[in-house]
Image (cartoon, rainbow, N blue to C red; front, side, top):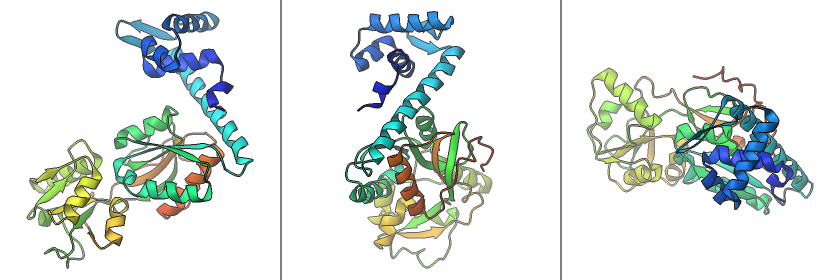
Length: 315
């Protein structure tokens, strides 16, 4: 049974238009005529005696009243999903879906391995994993597109409960046998003397690197720039040079002795956390809650409540 079958049809149609920003696109996704959708929206507006959308040539934009109703509609759909998940739990977690939004660093090895581990215990559970830029992960959770968000964070997010937070300092990544391998800790100036691979400027980790370099008057000239964590990791593991990254992204290659990890002593390299995020004040479906507990255990911390949902606790 699909969760939307437990939600009022008018609210479903309204929410689809709100998410798409277009009657035409929403009608295609719902397989319903655009004229029928328009009538449903008009009927809702008449019942509520207020406009829900601003109509523009390029699409539909929610009014303030529309934003309030959209929040209600999303939570209604999430409540329906939880009800179905709880019903599935009566069958011993043999059915259900866990939706994850995560940044690239976690998606290459860490999350797939966890999914396999979870499915060995609960074979009927399905997964949907969205790989997004770090700053888009909280929004996927906020919009109800994901049950759980896993990303690096440096600032609190509205309407997001941080279920677990763990330090994630930026580390130097070296190939085995590198000239710097005997050093217990390194600095960016030392890495600058070797072929360097870095993520692009819009990423959080690159911004941290650039700030540290600006403070030192240090210029880095990477030979490889990529937003794909695996590309950077395998560049180093293949002997191409050095890079920077997180322990969790490099864990599998480090454990196989294909990479060496060293702390960076430059100021600010520890001002980043890993966060497990959920929507504030939301009770997760049973399958998602069980996966959340597994995820927290694998990260090495204790799962907390949603006491941070106000966004008052952060870096």
